[in-house]
Image (cartoon, rainbow, N blue to C red; front, side, top):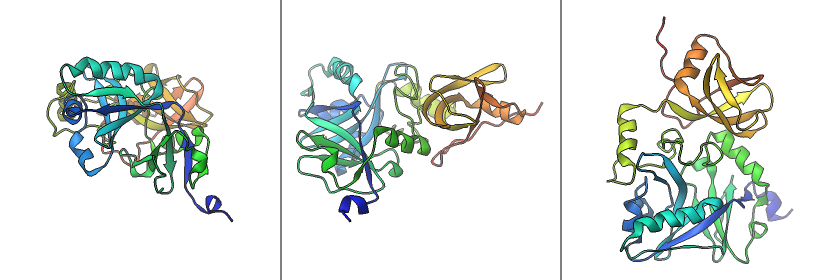
Length: 294
């Protein structure tokens, strides 16, 4: 039996991801002043999950920042790379920073195992949740077929992510429309509340200290196959919208207060004709809000 057949690990090519390179003497300080997370965490060689927000505190971009050589690489949705580079350049001013796309890298996700990095590849633990495994930035000349893991379709990675309750920007929330708490940045190591100022920081800190996040992305299940983009109703009130789906399982951005009230009143959540139940992910430190008795 081959090593590939014996190993439990699986790897998926994420063709919708791309890479930016950020270099220069001021790269770390520059990113530290912009991002939701603390660049100091990369000093040990670890990657961070972070966002770049609007001044109003909403997520414009989310990505991973990975130390590489004397600079950093950013693993982000491919269709946002151009705008992300443009936005970063807008803040650059006179800083000694260079921002460029790195098309020589392909991005893959690996779970249920570990991997010794092939020559030229960048391998890092997914900083959101240990169960998500690792991510691999593969340079030209190396493909997922060269890794000692069973290759799996991208849908399998998303099924794994959905089962864990981990949202993804562009699938589970719209860029420019969601706050970090709604997208679970506070639950998945995407924001550091002890670092100094960054764009949108005051709004995020206020939401944290006041506990005012009414909406959250949570796992859901349906009594029939789910469909992305369908509105969820709590009786006559809109309660949220379905994002990523995997058969009868999915994720949804929900008004937790309306969902909790409907549950307390015995009113089922519905998406069209489909009955929806929700549960909180295993990593959640938040709860459904208490419902005042009539």
